[in-house]
Image (tube, rainbow, N blue to C red; front, side):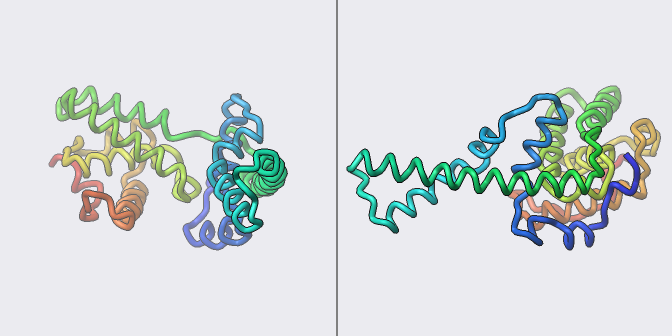
Length: 229
């Protein structure tokens, strides 16, 4: 992917369809990921998974508003059926509109790399290092993987290449677990990461974690402070 695919934080904030048009992109992203990974799912399935509870709550609210008798099975089923079809159609239209925005944003390039491949390579490299034992590596893997899952729902993946999201997650996970990573830049070079950019990424990651008020509030540190010296 070319550098032009990525955006600054200001650009993603200003041009975000969810902010500009009231469109939530998470549903479209789920649909797009299925298509990109050749595991297609029906649009109705995506609507059900993402908006199912919301649609249910809206129907209940409308039943109260229009004084639908919940004990009248025929009246209830007819009302709920009509409302469910209308609300589902609305959500489908929103997802389709969001799909156009996403495809335009990525230049219709579906060969999108995810951070997981680099994450596995980085963890394997650390596994060969005596600094991290088996138990520590397992914990590090679990936390880093969870972080990557989380970053995929944020604008970070629009700003930085997947290898930086992967390695940045490893560094932040090490910080959370108080694990020292190997000193030097050699292991970073092996996964195509430059320390200067990485430091910028982990600073942003830590800031986001701090704002989310996790159970363990961490002081923001640089990459080199997480490494052995």
